[in-house]
Image (tube, rainbow over all chains, first blue to last red; front, side, top):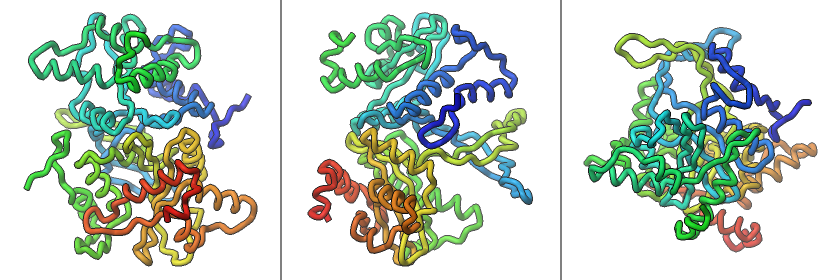
Amino acid sequence: MTIRYPNGKLYTPASSVAKAEKQGKTKDFSFSNRGKTLEDEINEANDYYLERRLAIIHKKPVPVQIVKVEYPSRSAAVIKEAYFRTPSTTDYNGVWNGHYIDFDAKETASKTSFPLKNIHTHQMTHMQQVTEQNGVAFIIIRFSAFERYFIVPYEVLQKAWQAMAHGERKSIPFSTIEKEAYEIPTSYYPRIDYLPVLQQLIVAKSHGFESEEIVE
Amino acid sequence: MTIRYPNGKLYTPASSVAKAEKQGKTKDFSFSNRGKTLEDEINEANDYYLERRLAIIHKKPVPVQIVKVEYPSRSAAVIKEAYFRTPSTTDYNGVWNGHYIDFDAKETASKTSFPLKNIHTHQMTHMQQVTEQNGVAFIIIRFSAFERYFIVPYEVLQKAWQAMAHGERKSIPFSTIEKEAYEIPTSYYPRIDYLPVLQQLIVAKSHGFESEEIVE
């Protein structure tokens, strides 16, 4: 069955997988999810949302400084020299039901905590700015040892970040994340269906996080 | 005087200009604005808004398909082969006072109309999706012959696009744009201060465009 996006583009759920295979990575397509990156999983959810017009969230292209471009005759322009630039924002943004959504994806192998060194200062600044403009800023963390996923609101990150600036610990304990973040239950497809969980966060935010205890 | 962004980054308004100079383009820095691209002008406005924390709107990086990367010893990774990809969305997005903002920039030398061929089908699809999610989608058009700038709401584009699909004209007459779009008056700095004009559009949208006559 041929499925098309609203823009007419062919829907090929295995495309990112095919690309990864081309790059020589071994992939396992069983439900156990081995080998899939967090980015693959988020892209899968975003494609699913886009296809059903539930939310319009895209990954931003990798920023590249282009130095040299060649124009071979009768061919597309070829970039012959370019460099990776540091992104000044987070990787994902978009709109859902009138809410501006802005987040980054982080993975950790740690079983005890999320190391704050995984977040760059400019990303914290960006999430702060988004929050000031009433956008919804957060990170999605995957604890790969447990295969557990959490939406961690900027407000939780900020508290830990400030504590670190005052000489306290450089990571967020897993127990704090279990308590203050919003867990994304995994399912078959999309594997991480994060929108319903985001709804909880948005409700909590609209109550100034007062109702956090009730929501969780 | 050294000005810094909230993220500590040095504020260098002439950077895009310097880059353009490096590319061998001749630039004129007088107030007449000769030689500045619409992209330069929008970046200038966005930098201004970001610096003052008025709105968080960024241009998305140019999407590139990276094929070959080399890692010279003791140097940064060098991209040796890459190709430009077609963007699937618009170029600019962000958040302003809780509103999701999404737009593209288009320039025309025509004195009589805006040719619809300047907009790609996938961009129309994207703006439609954004509008459905209660985001604010539009294009900024610069009529270079007059040096006049307009915010054209997606709704106006859609009407013209549908008419074209029914065999009607393939452009929007300048007179329609003067009547139905929102003109951005030019000023000294930033040259196109589009946020106040966008406010008018948002107010009109919230009234289902009923109050359009009054707003204009």
